[in-house]
Structures are given as structure tokens and as C-alpha cells.
Length: 303
Ligand SMILES: Nc1nc2c(c(=O)[nH]1)N[C@H]1C(S)=C(S)[C@@H](COP(=O)(O)O)O[C@H]1N2
Ligand SMILES: [Mo]
Image 1: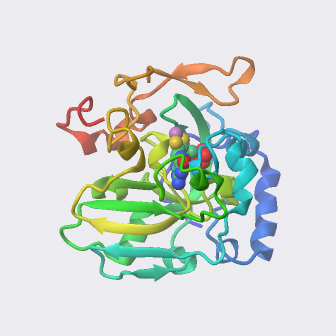
Image 2: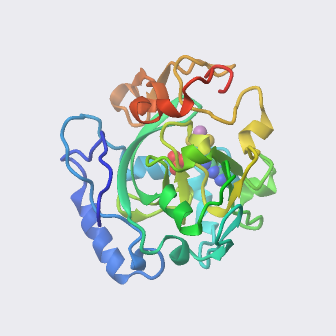
Image 3: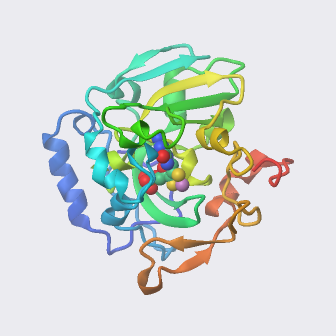
């Protein structure tokens, strides 16, 4: 599969190559997403950056997915109940080809990318995650964005009988998120379908979830069942829950603190003996790629 964009982070030599070999075996024998090749091949090799991805175990055992509970281990404990076959994504609003799409119809034949991205939660922890997925722009081009569309809205599945966090109403569900159209079309923005070459684990948002690496993690909405093109800024779950603390943009910004804590640094999960803190980077390290999207905007007002 082609690689059209180069990461500044790479799989180090220590990457468990066996995981990728296993994946090929899985691809050969699995129905559904894997069988039509929505899981990408191993990462392109560069050696300029010493940052190493978190382990598969770390990425799949320390999660936020409130539909399955608010504890970091709850999604890993409870998300096995999520039903992902069959799966349908409603595409509606200002598009040429609205409809209910199977994952194969929405994603099949598009280029699967391998992207090793920094991932920064608004709670001030971070990981480095090797995603596989498809540029959201490719999907939007497939469904045909109409003139006048300015935003993309996303919605997560609700399966009340399977989701203990929905039963407990820990947030107002369905979880909803949104991007400005130029953010959605940016080549860094990914519809992720896998991690480490494995199909997306349920606790990480199977079968497909957004990844917007320069924004706080809550913008990266999981288990998407609806994509809507609109000309109005869509409501977003954490902004609905607390507008003073969570804005629409939610770009990672070490100079704009959360009302209740500093965003200047972060705790790197699995960061060795001391669970090490490191400085948080402007736009999470993607400033060169995305700063131009926000030219002229006051980032402390548009947080
Ligand atoms: N539907 C849904 N999507 C969600 C969340 C959630 O609770 N529900 N949590 C968000 C938050 S706060 C973060 S940090 C990331 C976590 O992604 P990960 O568990 O794959 O690391 O998912 C985001 N997407
Ligand atoms: Mo988060």
C-alpha cells in the first residue's frame, strides 16, 4: 500500500515485528475490515526521531471511552460488548452521495496510511500511537462535499444495553464531535481503522474512529456511525458538558491552560521509572503543518 505522507515519528527498531507478521496472517484469514485491506502495512523507516510508540498493551489498557465507564481500565474491561458487525455509517447533510454506508463502501479501495502520531489528552497525559487509517479527506471526496459546507459533524454509536456508561448517563450521549471543513480535509486528519497493523480494538473505537493529532484527544471521536456536512458549527459533547472548560477548537496549546490545571507539560504514559513529564508542544508538535489554519485567530479566545 502506498505511503503518501511521511511521519516525523517512526517505528524504532524495537518495534515488535512479530505483530506485523501476525497481522498479515490475520488479514489472510479474517472477514470484514481486515479482509478488504483496511489495515495498513508497517511504518516507513526514518531514524531522526528517538520517540518510540507506546506498546500495544499500553494503548489498549489506558483509555477514555465514557460509554464504557469513566475509569481508565473500564473500556478494556467492558468494550468487548460493543457490537461492530454489521456496521453502518450514515452520511448526510451537504453531500452529493448521502446514504447509509457499510465500512467497505465507505473505505474500501482507499489508501491505508501508517501514521505514528503524538496523542495528547486534555487531562495532560500523552502517548505515541502507530495508527493505520485513511485520510478523512479521501472519504469526504468519495461522498462529495457540496459548495457551502463549512463543518463536518460526527456521532458515536449508542448501544445502551451494551454500554454501562450510557446506562449511567455519565455524559449526554450520543457522543458528538466536529471539525471545521479545512481541518477535516487536512492530510494529518485520519479515519483510523487499526493500531500496530491490527484491526482497531473495541476500547480504542472500533471499527473506525477519528484521529486529529494536533487537538486534544477528546476531538478524536470513536466508533463513528454518522458523518454530517453542514454550514453551521456543530455541537460537541465536552463543550456541551462544560463550555467554559472545553472549546470547539481544542487545539493542543501549552500556553493556554485548562481552568483547573496547566497544559504546559504532560505525563508520558509508560514513560519509564518516573512516568516522565515532558513539555507539551504547540499544536502537539504539528505547528509547521497546521498553524496556518488558525492565522489571525486569537487562540486564547478560540480555545
Ligand atoms: N465516543 C467517544 N469517543 C471518545 C471518547 C469518549 O469518551 N467517547 N473519549 C475521548 C478522549 S477524552 C480521548 S483522550 C480519546 C482516547 O482515545 P484512546 O482511548 O484510543 O487513547 O478518545 C476520545 N474519543
Ligand atoms: Mo482525553
